[in-house]
Amino acid sequence: MIEGEAEELAKAAIERAKAGDGPLLKSLIERLSPPQRSRAVRIELPPLDNIEGVSNALGAVSESVADGAITPDEGNTIAGILDARRKSLETLELEARIAKLEQLPRGR
Image (cartoon, rainbow, N blue to C red; front, top):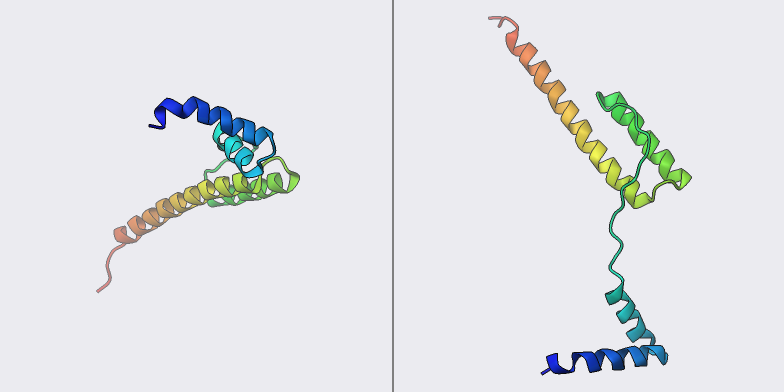
């Protein structure tokens, strides 16, 4: 039923929006303009080889947000990635420490 009248309905909606129907205009604009997707950002980060590097990188991200180079949401996303890197480094460090402990002679 509606398929045959889609074009006519669309034209009527556009005319009503042009005539001042604010909610309809908003709805049409939302449908015509897709929501903003995340964008690629470039910021200088120190090497992430160790926990100190990750900590320094978090500082750089904070500075980028404060300077307006990236949005707070973008900063939060990058901070989440850096936190995952920190956890990975911590896990590797703990595994190495456990392996060393397991190699020690056991006292009786």
